[in-house]
Length: 252
Ligand SMILES: Nc1ncnc2c1ncn2[C@@H]1O[C@H](COP(=O)(O)OP(=O)(O)OP(=O)(O)O)[C@@H](O)[C@H]1O
Ligand SMILES: [Mg+2]
Image (cartoon, rainbow, N blue to C red; front, side, top):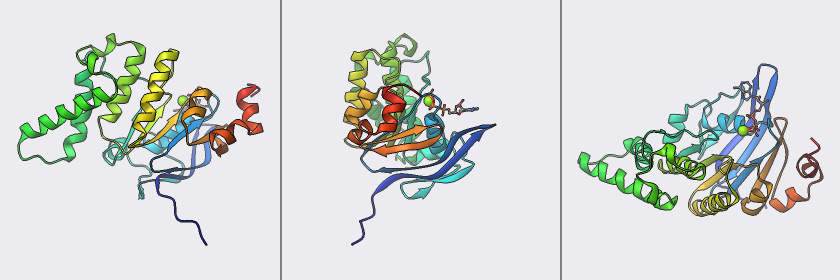
């Protein structure tokens, strides 16, 4: 009996991208089942961010194909991809620094709400404000709603990044090192939040902290020099000799 087809929200096949002489992504295939929490790990410069940029339309692949929810989105711009329900939180913070937390999230919610039709403009505004409030609650930023973004702690700025991505009501959320530079306490809180978000959306995340990834991911793809070195469950990754060599002994 053949296996039933997996319900994939994302399927990237044979992706390839060079920058000058650097082969940043070399024939990478990535399949992400709906509802899962999939992690991409790998040493510095192994191609993780480039892979994300190829998926989100920030960088064009030289070869390969990206399917989101069964549709070919290869080469589509990020704004088009985002409208289809794919959101990305950046490794580099992209908030408006002089606006409040509330305004930052509301602007993102408003941009995404263009696709809805309301009978009266006031209903549209109310819906956007309601959605903004929900996102602030969910991300633990409700108490900081009036704070100017640039005055937030580093941890809260990263949380705001996440809130901005969430405000677009995505079905797939891409996170590029959401705990980068965070204290252990903020890291733990962010991981709890990601776990919570994963209850109703699919998460694809890049993360450097091995302990974090091993504790939350369903599947881990290990990139090394632009190629997939290994893919498996946290237990499989932990016990894989080559991964251990790349990571645990730090020999590469
Ligand atoms: N726009 C670009 N122009 C030139 N080279 C690039 C560009 N983007 C990425 N690269 C190169 O491609 C390779 C992969 O980079 P990438 O940023 O994808 O790695 P990464 O795994 O995300 O690294 P890190 O862990 O440091 O974030 C690196 O050698 C990098 O210098
Ligand atoms: Mg990166």
